[in-house]
View 1 (cartoon, rainbow, N blue to C red):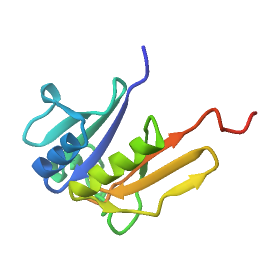
View 2 (view 1 turned 90 degrees about the horizontal axis):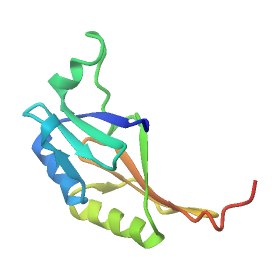
View 3 (view 1 turned 90 degrees about the vertical axis):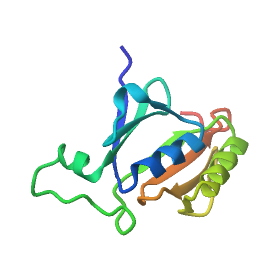
Length: 137
């Protein structure tokens, strides 16, 4: 069995967040969604669980606070794209859906990336790695 990754994120406006990810081209798994949570399928092994704040609090210690990702970086989620053009297209699509730019494009040899912040401040990086141009080991 392949290991699956579930990224659990607290969101202020669940319907708005669902529409954002659908707008990026990802599907919602209705079997694991309700009025407090939505499962977004990124790939066969990667899922984003969008959780309302009350639902998210069910998974953390009672005295723990939910961080405000707009004022402190909590995580940087990076997703591979097939090409530099696909990176730019996903970045532009995210901005058109209401995300904000997080940083200038980054070029590090064989890697190219662009980053956005979603409505709740979570950072998403879209990147392409040209393995043919990567330095040999």
